[in-house]
Amino acid sequence: MDDMTFFHEGTLRICGSLDIDEVLQDCYAFLKQFMPVNGILMSIYESEISAVRIIAFMNDLGIRYPEPIIPISAEACRLIESGADGVEIVNHARATPASRDVSMALGLTEMSSLILHLKVREEMIGVVGVFVGENNRYQESHGRLLELLHDPCAIAMSNTLRYQEVLRLKEILRDDNRYLHRELHRISGDEIIGANFGLREVMEMVRQVAPLESLVLLLGETGVGKEVISSTLHYSSSRRDGPFIKVNCGAIPENLLDSELFGHEKGAFTGAIARRRGLFERADNGTLFLDEIGELPPSAQVRLLRVLQTREIERVGGTKPVAVDVRVIAATHRNLEAMVRNGDFREDLWFRLNVFPITIPPLRYRKADIPALVSHFIERKIREMKLRFRPTLSPGALERLRHYDWPGNVRELENAVERELIRSQVNGPDVSLAFRDVDIPDTSPEPSGISEGKKTASLADVNRRHIRSALEMTGGKVQGEDGAAALLGVHPSTLRHRMRKLGIPFGRKR
Ligand SMILES: Nc1ncnc2c1ncn2[C@@H]1O[C@H](COP(=O)(O)OP(=O)(O)OP(=O)(O)O)[C@@H](O)[C@H]1O
Image 1: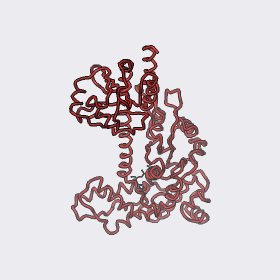
Image 2 (image 1 turned 180 degrees about the horizontal axis):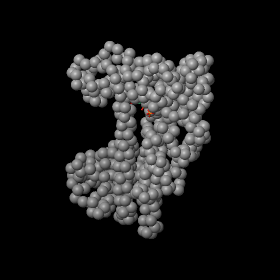
Image 3 (image 1 turned 180 degrees about the vertical axis):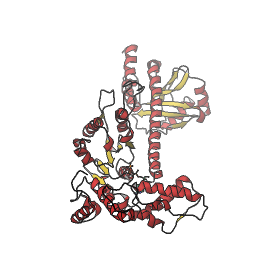
Image 4 (image 1 turned 135 degrees about the vertical axis):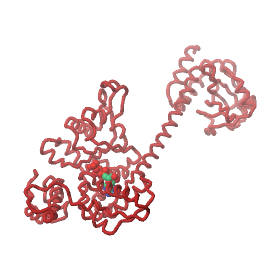
């Protein structure tokens, strides 16, 4: 083989892969045709610690991968720093200080080596050592051949160092990411209060569905805790170490929705100066929580359905579909079934989303959870707001909270606690929380045709609103497992009787 062909063939092997172990195996098989070789070693010199660090190593003598850092003597350091060049032929294990240190580290009593010193723009970046486990095996001609491969070896060495750095940084990032996820989960305090009381059935369903890959639809009025439940679903699933991405479908302007959800390619539209991954791609191997799914415009509904069916997204301006492994949890406070009937939501998408619906009951139907929620929020707010005084509850406060209807549900209760805590701080350490402004009667509009005075009407009104909102959530259905009677925990005929008495119309449209 002439020098040109040797160089060409050698370069193909050296630059054939980013996996340096694969490269060494290929080079070993190639070099064996031209010279004695038992192993190859790539190392760099670490002047600060007077050692060589092994970057890659292979051999056919059964020598185990040595400790990556091989300390070398001061004499060896001096020689390396004096700026060796080209190929050094060392035909005895004890011939030079460096070969003595390395052969000892490899456990070889005899060793011949060809040391190719790699330099890029006069800067020494490391060495490639080809060795054999006997003394006196290398000649000038072997050295000359190896020297032909200096440039490809230098490129491979610098690529390997960079690639190993990328892998190291990637691992650090992954580790940071896992840590931040756990922290986020801890700080957001996703403890579910009422898991054994008012939300027992919900939590039972969460336990059933969390380990599966199924789509989950969370239904319930605003502020009932759809987001906390979705995060519990994610963190109890096998995807818990993957991302949990939340998106409020109602908060993204329609013209930006596609690019937010599916990303865009560079130049897809004015202002798309770089490729951008969408939320689906960011949620890869994790969970995407699509809140307020009822607010999705019809065009986005079509595209979402396609993604759910194909598990592939297409970036705006892209030509190739991109596979994504994402579990979707959707949520809405709206009655999707009624929206489907009115033509505001696609039936096929609703079918797809409605595989495992979980309805979270409003706070007014689980008032037994109020004391635990209040103390949970007091603890949380004291921590978050770094408050100085820990107030107590004044007599009658819980009664007042239980008496109220909580149209804004748990979020409203959380806000009420925060407000009361802020007020309390100005009054010194012995203050208690009274929640006097929660005692106001319900302010939602009166149903038309009611002529009773406010005082006599209030109980009927409260009942009427409870029943109406239960019907709202069940799409007007009274009977059956998913009917309003089951939701309210009463017999269907009792509910019908009350509806008649309160003048609530029957039927699906209300
Ligand atoms: N069971 C619960 N235990 C502890 N905190 C809760 C619970 N339910 C809700 N919260 C808290 O109440 C607030 C509102 O809950 P969340 O945002 O989950 O409601 P939501 O139903 O998603 O509301 P929206 O429909 O407006 O998006 C959050 O701060 C949440 O942490």
